[in-house]
Image 1: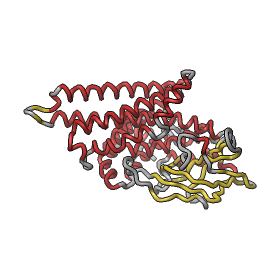
Image 2: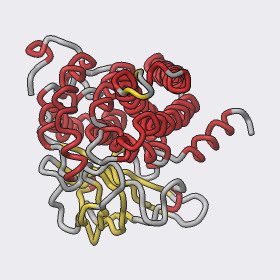
Image 3: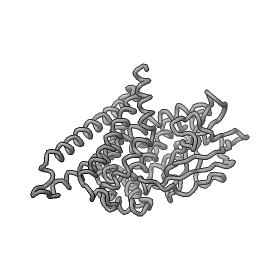
Image 4: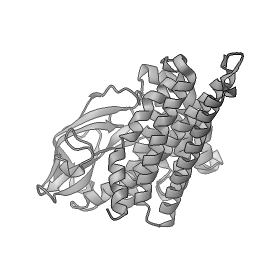
Length: 378
């Protein structure tokens, strides 16, 4: 990995420098479904894998604000590359917050270097928004934990860079108040069984799979925090994931706007570019205003986190507003392009396919509204 001194620029500018390379390959990866190995290698070489890792472990120690700004730049080029990086950084953030110094020294340098890619396994066939329904179990057995269960829609588990997963598992109890833990399960551990890639409408080049754990044994020191601390760990991680998803949504919405403006200026109908028609102008103006508002809310939320000010409900607000803005922007961009926007070779068709999942992943819009309502005392 190049050092910050060798690169000579901050992480936001590094992301900007990578964006052109990422964008050039994005449409090809969308059509083929091929994992963007070259793009991820470029991000790794730029030091972006370690944005939230302390410098002592090989990272850049970047702020949350810098992180979301960098993520937005990458998302403007390719959402799937940005989300692959987001999942990795979510895992490193959980390590940063809850791992012991010994655990950090063991795992974080490789994850910061760009040579290894991390993932987080939470979702199950019957446990999406309802995390307390997680049925994967982890039972103590001598100096080990033994995991059994099944996860689905898990990212970064089957790539050439994949180093393992942080796995959420039930450690005790049934019913209303079960205990949960978060475990580091290295790639190649016996009983850790990634399935085939899941074919999806959008996010087509992401490595997304079902994962099964069958008598998967990990050493006792592979648990992060304490056995009953899992829900707190997941809550802290998901809050960062929400503001990160907001940043990715803003980046995708900005790509929609940029493409729509460029097309409207060159597409001629009735003797003039369609950008001269008020109906098109107003559509573009609304897109620009909505994106600016979503970006401001996202950056505000990141700034609150860096300042140590309560920010969890704002993370849900940012995710709700930005993902909704993203879906509308993709729809409007296709409308501006007309029939050409429905052709798979066109970038806006990719944006349209990628956008909808932004309202579902990292907590649905309905769940974000529930969190916001609770913060209002409802």
